[in-house]
Image 1: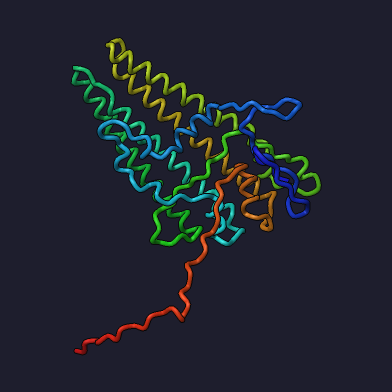
Image 2 (image 1 turned 45 degrees about the vertical axis):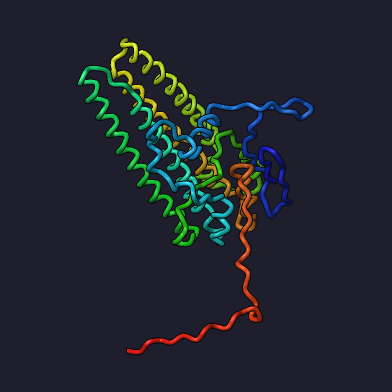
Length: 321
């Protein structure tokens, strides 16, 4: 039995082991079963980081102008798994999928950092201008390096799921988990052994989830600190070094957030693979990871024209040499 946040899916044993419960986005309800929705720092940040860059472009020359075409091939996780046709590769595909998702987040943060730095007024001191030029050039390098890393991770996913080579590189549209994850380890492994790795994942997941939420809180606090530092700098009460240090602190916390989020979801995928064997349908396996996946239905093959409707070909003369 797998219980996503909004609906329960039950399968009798032995086809599927006991419940794995992904997180609910709602707080604990009352005795009547009602719940009050809440938004955590991680959920707030995830909403920002997965928003396509083209929809966030502001100003006269946004850094995201050079990033067009990144979102032309949406890829649900269900499609990725079913295109493979090999359930024994589920873990590899899921891990590659979340790696691409994390790299999209890194590119998002890199573009935001560059745009924010370009909006800083250096003041009259040439020293300020020089320091700001260094920071902007470094941010441009970070964006280029992040884009290159994204291309590499996208190609790895393409190779695993065998996407046609003429299609654009994939954009993962399923969101990784940021809420708590109930493993029900004791119930699931009451009658069968668990490897040391699965035992460690079960013990680590609550701590990794705490890290995800704490890193998100740190990012939001760092964003606020930048606003304060820039306002003070504009009034001449804070040097530009403090502003750039605040930007660097935000960059570091953003990377740490994505690292924690990626680690959390990769461990969940590994745990789910230890619980659900290859007989479990792909959609049900995904619900063990994120609760409510993006739906996907395979497109029917192109209609074949009946022979009776074919038109005779015009005779052609082939030139001889």
